[in-house]
Image 1 (cartoon, one colour):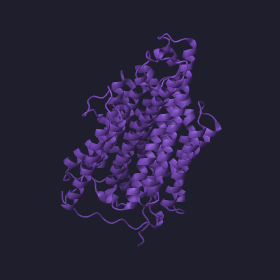
Image 2 (cartoon, helix red, strand yellow):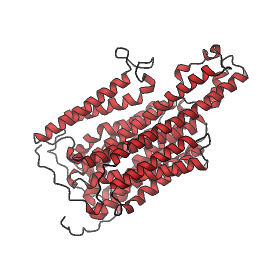
Image 3 (cartoon, helix red, strand yellow):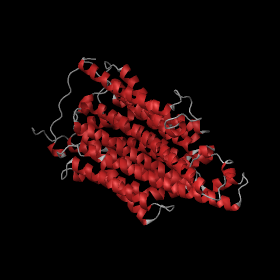
Image 4 (tube, one colour):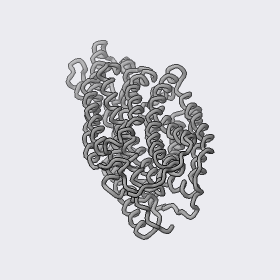
Length: 541
C-alpha cells in the first residue's frame, strides 16, 4: 500500500457539534425507558403503550434513513443537518408539553424522521471534515457519545424523574438540539448534488419492509404468535397478522436487494450502494451490529420495566441499577480503540461476544428482586465491557472498508441496522417476557391449592402483564378473595415474574452465543494494515 502525506490537523470544535448530535439522539432514546414509570402514572396507560413510543422512534429512523442519506447528498449535508436538528428540537418541545401518550408517540415519530438524516450526516460530515487518525478518532467518538448518553440519561433522567418529573428530562434534549444547531456553523461540507435522483421504488420497498417487520415483532404478544387473539385488528384465515407481517417484510426486504442490484447493473444510482457490503467481512459486521444493538435494547427495556413497574421503585433507583452497565459501556467504547493496533477485529469481536454470553448466563442465575447485589453488578459490568467494545468495533469495520464518497451510504446502513435492531430488541423483550409470564402464572395458578377456579374466573388471565404486588392486591380487593388467597396470588405473581426474567436472560444469552459465528468472520487485519478502499464505480443518475 502506498504511503500518503500526513493530513493537516483540523480543529476539534466542529466535532463537538457532531458528538453532541449523537448524544442528542442517544439521550432521547435512553430517556424513554427511564421515564417509563412517570409516563405510565401521568397518562394512566399500560407500560406497553409507552414502549410503543420507543418502537416508533426506531421504526421511523430505520424506515427513512436510506432516503435521508440521499436527501442529504442532494441538498447538501450542512443544510439538511440544520433543518433536521431544528425538527428534533420541535419534537423535544412536544415531549415537554405532551398532554397524552399519543403526543409522546407523535413526538418520537418526528424525532425518528429527523434522526433518519442526522445519522448518515454524522458519517458524511466526519469524512468531509477530518482525515487520517483524526477521522478514526472521530468515528470512535460516536460510540463513546452513544454510551455516555446512556449514562447521563439514566442518572440525570432518574434524578429528575424522581425529584421533579419526567418532562424536564426532555428539556435537556431541547437544550442539546439548540447547542448542536449553533455548533453546526463551524462545520464545512461540499454543496449538494441536485442531479441525484432518489430511487422511489427502493425507498418504498425498504420502508414497507421495515415497517412490517417492526410491527410484526412488536405485536407478537398482543396479536398472537400464531393464531389471532381478540386484540388483533384482523386475521388471515385465523392467523395472527403479526407473523404474516414478518414474512411479508422479509420478502419485501429481499425484493429491495434484487431491485438495487438490478439498478446498479444498469448504471443508475441506487438508494444505497451495496458495495459497502461487498464482502463477507462487512456483512458479518452488520449482523454483529444488529445483534449487539438488539441485546442492548432488550436489556434497557427489561431492567426499567422490572424495577419501576414490578418493584414500584423510582426512576432514580433505575438509574443506579443501570449505572454499572452504562458506565462500563462508555469507558470500554472509549478505550477499545487503543487495542486496535494489537488485536484484529475478529479477535476482539469473538472475545466480546463471549463476554456478553457469559454475563447474561451469569445474570440469569444470580438475579433476584434486589438489583443492587454484588453478583448482579458484576454481571452488568462484564456485559458492559463486551457491549462497549462491540458498539465501536463493528462501526469502525464498516467505515474503514469503504471510500469517503460512500460515507453517507455507510451511515444509512448503520442507521437502518441500529434502529431496526433497537425496535426489534425492545419488542422482542416485551413479547418474550409477557409470554413467559403468562405461561408461568397459568401453570402456577392451576397447581396452587388456595387459588380456586371460582376466584380465577374473576381475574382476567388472558390479559396478564407485569404489575406490582400493590396493584395486584388492589385488583384482588374487588373479588371475594380471602386474605390467604390474596397472599397466595401475590406470591405466585412474584415467583412467576422472577422466573420470566431469568428465562428471558437465558434466551438473550443464546442470542449472544449465536453472534459469535458472524464475529468469527470479521476482518483479521488490524487498522494500519487495511488496504485502500476501491473507488466507487462511475454511474449515471
